[in-house]
Length: 484
Image (tube, rainbow, N blue to C red):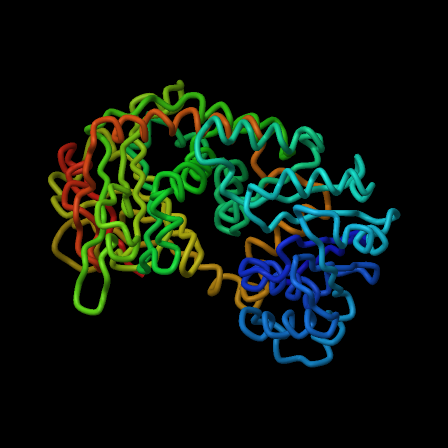
């Protein structure tokens, strides 16, 4: 299978926060891999911008170190690295003042695609947008990329959206959620809408329930102070897991275009029922030998913030009425894994008699690690002795199915940044979508805050609090095992 790399138009990409951690870990290595893959046009330019006083050589050394640390393909090719660095330049600007903006204006061209990546705290979005317009650097055709968090609650999200709307049209704003850039997440849409095999079964008549798990082995570590103001609900559920729910539950859009897709996602969020307090389990990881507890990591011994969250929710529309969606995410769990499991109902009548070990059909979409799709089907166990049924997987990992091509698949940031240059907003959140998600989330947070609910303690390396198991057990269901 030949890899198809479609070059983009010449562009200037200005990365505000260009010397920050996200730029070093994700943005710059991702851009380098796209250059290595042959996707850069000759007229591409990457401008790093921050308050730091750095020479061009110092910034290029920073970029070279980022490539060595976080890029894979081509990271040991000195000619490729040198070629990429020829596209890189740097300017020092003050987001809160006027220093450096004339220099930036002189660098940015007017005859190419112009994109501005706000890899900074949300509090700087307004000052940056204001100065881009005051110094006539931005235009009605430029694009701006903003990172999460998109607010802390509904009111702050509305304020943030209004701040951006003061300077840019909605068609210019790209709210980036890297989960939507994952290859497997996009394949979820291909599986649903590209195969007649699944779509007729994708509803409450045939689906028993759906599980979404995003588990991490790490704790909050050095970001404890930030995380303690956020928690699993704001950090993961309100954005990443909500997007996965939307892609699973949405109706087929009339075409694969940005607003057609996002219109259907918005309908899902607005159809979400309020969640009963008894259908929510919050947890905090305890300490263990050599591992600090959440209370220690957050430096807040009285913290009521959750590092784990599990819940059951319902989508009240014709397709999904009565089918529960179970969401689970947490820190310090037994394995690092992200997956979606669509658990189908059993046949209405078994012609084979009692089969106590039978578990039924499950479609699993693995986001990480080892991205791929697995479908569990029932077959006869080989050999004599009657009709004994067993389950076997039809397994497609990208690494095995695509071979060398799998190593060349762009990661989430690579794909999303290239979509910005192309002007394709399909995989980016719209402002009304963000606000609808917060409108559903806020009452849940306000509810447990008002009640003074305390998170349940769980051991590092476990699957979370025991109470989370009961969410499914009380309805004769089971969570899937958290495993690599």
